[in-house]
Image (cartoon, rainbow, N blue to C red):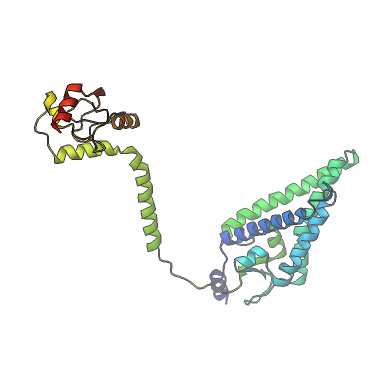
Length: 305
């Protein structure tokens, strides 16, 4: 009997992360409801709700409690995650919802406790009498003990995965699934493939800016078209000066960078400004100086055409 109970509990055990997510969803809902409620009084006198803010919040939280835990045995966050509260004091293996007294005490501990804390804070802030000194110390001591108890309960929850809050432990209610969870086999092939391609894409994004395309083209062209010899005469410049080595058009304001190839002035200058290690895309010669082509060579080329 005991082993059957343990197997049932292990099969229907709610993950710790799911219970914590439910608490965070509850907090987000409360903030959303409060922000929407305060917007209704946006056009009224400023500070209208400040005096009765703890009481107004308590009424709103009671309204939420009435239509969530009291009627459905689960908070809004738990309903989203297919979770609900179960009476831990029940000896039956079947699901037993929390009793009416447990639900009422849940509201007292959560809603009443927050209201009392906020109201006492406002009371002690507005009254600086000596008679409130001891009361304030007692209240701070009790709040500190509750915070310490909540911390210890959270550490136990991380170890055992049951009773996410101190209120749940004191009232004997814990989270269970609304419907039995089926065991599913999850395949990670698609996830591994996506992770691999994402990693490869990030590597390319990091690597591509470091690669000089012009240098790569110059290296490839120098390997594929080996140079027969380095020309050293002006006639060779004239022979190769029919087109710009970058744009392929008739060179405008023809210039040379130290090799036999001719460039437009603006093509060579812009490439050099973009990459200070700019080399000739055809022979791989580095830029030593940008020199204009001799007028005699330019005129002989024009006459040849």
